[in-house]
Length: 114
Image 1: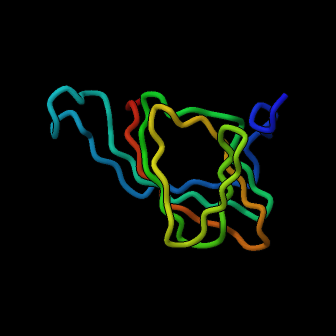
Image 2: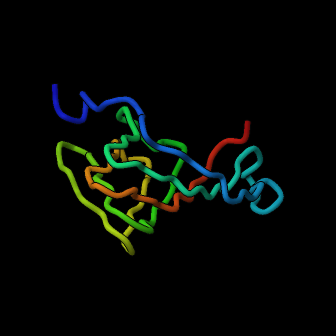
């Protein structure tokens, strides 16, 4: 089993909803979807898992503080403050904070409304 397949469950991660926009009235064909912005904080040792994809949920991430390690395709990449990445339909990954201080990111994505 690869490292990605053995990703641990989510722990030590909190998410604060900052804003949403109902996209139905804004863009034709987007009924039932919303643009969502969250601040996600990873405590030291925190994990956002298990492995998940972004099919039907594209987004972008921007790191505010600390370092978040992205695990995808057997490759780990560390992202620190001022750096971010896209999450498109080809993204399959899990995230963790291997550092000694909390790490925070702003996550913006398009999701189906409940």
